[in-house]
Image 1 (cartoon, rainbow, N blue to C red):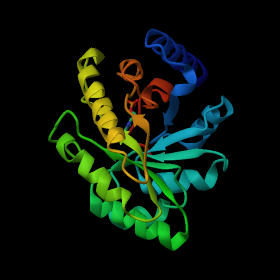
Image 2 (cartoon, rainbow, N blue to C red):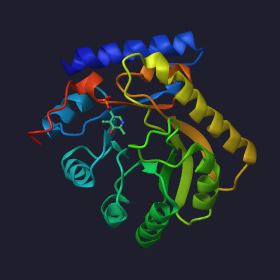
Image 3 (cartoon, rainbow, N blue to C red):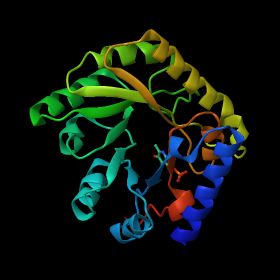
Image 4 (cartoon, protein in one colour):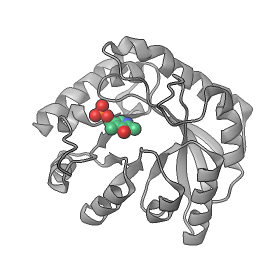
Length: 231
Ligand SMILES: *Cc1c(COP(=O)(O)O)cnc(C)c1O
C-alpha cells in the first residue's frame, strides 16, 4: 500500500511542478509518520524515504533510536520548552518555532551540545484561533530576534493551513506565506537563510507546490489514516 501511495504522491508532485515551472528537486517530500510503528517507517525507508516528520518529542526520540542513522528527522509539532533538550542534537530541522522564548531555549541547548539547529518560524497565516504560530504581522520581527541567537539558523517559514474540502481555498494562505518569505529575503538579515517554505499536507500539497513549497508534509497520503487509539 505504501508503495502505491508513494507512487501516487510522487506523480502528483511532479505534475504540480510541471504546472508551475518548477523541478522535482525543488521539493522535498517529508513522510509524516506520527502514530505509525517503526516497521511501517522502515517500509517507507526501504522505498527511498529519508525525510520523516514527527510531532511528539518522545515518539521522535524512540524512532530515532530504532531507525537508520541517515534519516533526516523533522520536528513539525508544537514544541514545549522543557522538551527541547531531548531532540536538539537529533533533529535535522524544527519547523514549529513560534516564540522567542522557545528559540532561546533551542539556542541554549544547542550551545550546550555544540550543535547548530536549523529552524523554521511557524506563521499562522490563516489566523485560526486554534493554531499555534506567530501572526503574519509579527513574523518578520520574530525572525529578526531569533537570528541574533547563537547556534540557531533560520532557514525559512512554515504554516499549517486550515482543513478544507477544496484545497483551492488554501491557495491564498500559501501565497501569503511566500510573500512574507520574500519580504524577509529583501531585508537581508544576518544569519537568516530563507530557503525553505514548509507548507502543504495530504489535502493540499499540490496547491502548496504550485505556490512555491520546498518542504511538503504528507502523512495520510503515504501511510493511510491514523489510528489515535492504539499508539
Ligand atoms: C499530521 C501533520 C501533517 C500531515 O497531515 P496529513 O493530512 O496526514 O498529511 C502535516 N503537518 C503537521 C504539522 C502535522 O501535524
